[in-house]
Length: 266
Image (cartoon, rainbow, N blue to C red; front, side, top):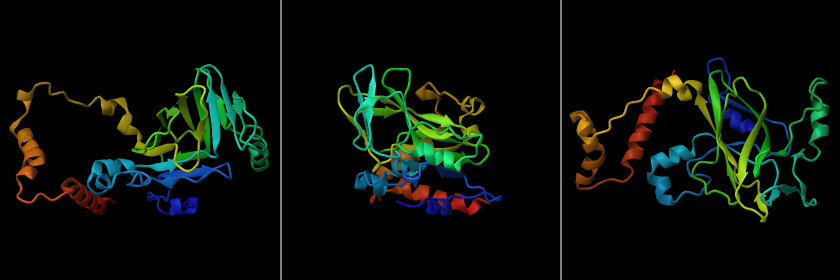
């Protein structure tokens, strides 16, 4: 697992030297984030990895975040129980990470002591749980983090994470995951070997209403223009008419375009 220093070394910086994303590990034993990779942590089929640029680009977009320790949950449809490190099962309301409170208070200024984030908490809705990753994140001004399940990784059984967008350029607090338990009366294990989250930096304008309200609907087939039909022909028809059709044409074009974009970036 790469260290935080390695991650920082590969992070793009603006002209003032500020990283696009900075991760702060508070729980010392928590796994460090990793840059997401094009193979979806090695889970993609070989053909998809080699030729499907949309899948590999989505897989590599962002950073993997892991649970700070392995633990198990048990939900009976009403109440949630939890256990960690072989401890007896106990009801979950709000649970501190073992031994972290003392570490936090020893490092924090007096005004912050006693305010260590809880590790796990049962939310008021049945079967909903919040987990703190042990991290805090900060983004460059104007950027936020989309917090979501890992892209294209097979889902683990027993729980389903929610997605959320956090304005981490101004909100410096725990990086958490909210998830819904989907099994009852069966222990649900959360491990540290695979990521539980993928966090993806987004410029704030990309999800603002003034941006998303700029869309157009073309409801009838007959309304496509000659230029749009020509684009369809180039994309869908022309490759099938080639005597020798090379695989991965979309991927090659995307890489060429990316290389050109990078040369133009100041």
